[in-house]
Image 1 (cartoon, rainbow, N blue to C red):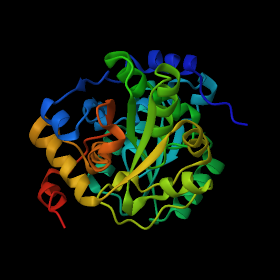
Image 2: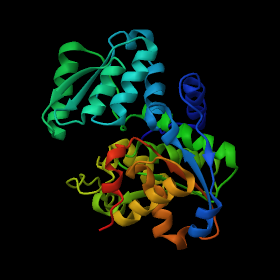
Image 3: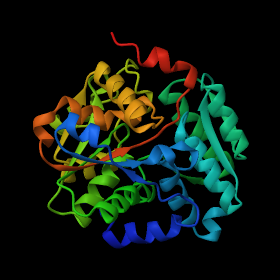
Length: 320
């Protein structure tokens, strides 16, 4: 039986990250409320440092290390926001970070990791190659492994976003967050359970990457599907820790179609002037696609990130 992070753990994480992470705003839109048929409160992690919630978990993990644990630096594998977050968190603590990245990672993300002082080791673009290359580095050089999501230090840090949301709006009827590897959703599920116990937590996932939905439905962890969705931040499969938390504390995972993700992105841009990446719009997309689930309710919606190549907006918003 796993020992999940406690309410005290989440409060301690909030204090730990306070000097370094933004307390992001919660925003509302009367137009979107009318369109969705419910009262929406958006936790805008697209306005967080590095443009995504990932900095919360990375800072909590890095700053919770003892001096002896931190002395050897930290390491992970990631091609996305966790890579940048860990590099920045390590820089803030004054220790080294080594990131295993696939050789086809976007140049802008490689540059961001280097800009935060991270050391990059490239590998073939497969999950197996990432895991093997990282383990080889750890065996040879040491260092503390900080997994992108399957780590309770990370989960506890991500849980602070949900805690802040509830502190700001009072008890909601429901909270919804996107799910890829499950760090944000499992953290959100714990915060909702602890700080708004009468509320339900929902996960939101693209129908073209519905491994989390199938995993919870079937009670086993299914591997992720080949990339097919525009929500490229949600392509990772669950880990055993995130699976355990979500299985126990999430009411449902709702899947959404690609055109609904596009519609949600466009609405957030046009009605709220928010730049949101496809993965960050998936939670709103789930509310729009499953209106009966949220009708008349007070709903907290976590916008997970806003790291978007602006030149790709016309392509991303083009409906099928």
